[in-house]
Image (cartoon, rainbow, N blue to C red):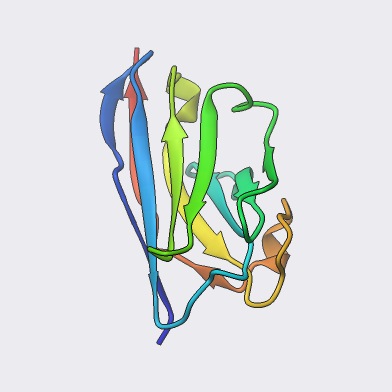
Length: 125
């Protein structure tokens, strides 16, 4: 059974940093693109960042560009999201996602086949 398990969320002050991790099990994602999305109550899940299978290429939402960094460790079957200079508007549940076969990053939700349960990030001012 494939599982993606996020960790690293928490309550932080504006300007602080957090590092989210997403550990995959049940199959290897060394040849798969992975991404991070977020969702707040009453809103649709939105794209945050994505990385291709070998970390050679990444893509970010404009709202996080320059502050967040996505990375992938194929040896650990894990994807990370380093979040710096956090803002209250970054408050959301953060989800990691993985493509079954796709090697290149994508921002559309429907191309991802596996999803984690999410981790809460709350940023107060």
